[in-house]
Length: 107
Image (cartoon, rainbow, N blue to C red; front, side, top):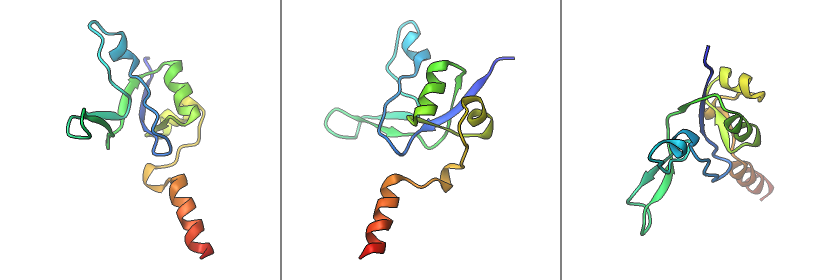
């Protein structure tokens, strides 16, 4: 049985992790996991986070990216395969929010 990972781009970092299947395809294309290109951002276009998870084949490179926090698991099965704790995206708290709350609390 072939394993698949459901992942999203992390909100903690702005890391652009290459979609290896697109990169190794013929002809290759530049795509990033969890990001979409928007031509209207900036002068030459830019990348925006996707709202929906991306399904990828199981590869050690993707597992490493999840473990390092560049990608986040979108379901419990992916978290288990990657050896990380799964927390639903809407319940996760970004570092920026935590810092803002500390500043608000201290003033």
